[in-house]
Length: 150
Image (cartoon, rainbow, N blue to C red; front, side, top):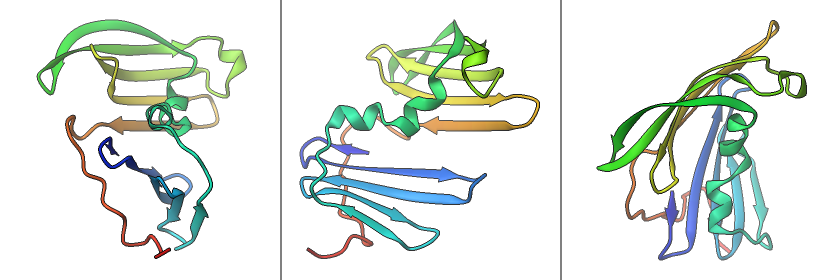
């Protein structure tokens, strides 16, 4: 979530394979990362962040690197036109750990990634990554309860 009016953002990353569940809160006071599995809080009050960094965050963007894709259909997402791409494989499979990939990516005409569901793998592992925007519009990002007082 990104609250443009307040200049705050919140993201959650869950990795079922490694058992992590991390919440990250971005504000004018810095970046705060809370690990729900261990209860540890990493405070980086001097870290600057940019709204476009949230949209291109490594955790969101990384599963999309080196994919072969084909536009397969035009669909509607939140009453706006979007394109659904089918993932057909990996470009340069020698340069990444995976040599196969399947799934889909949905991108709105405004350039927002609305969702993806991608499975990558090789003979030794398979990893599925799912990303879904729950809604477009105005968001209010409240200060999380786990965040310490100044």
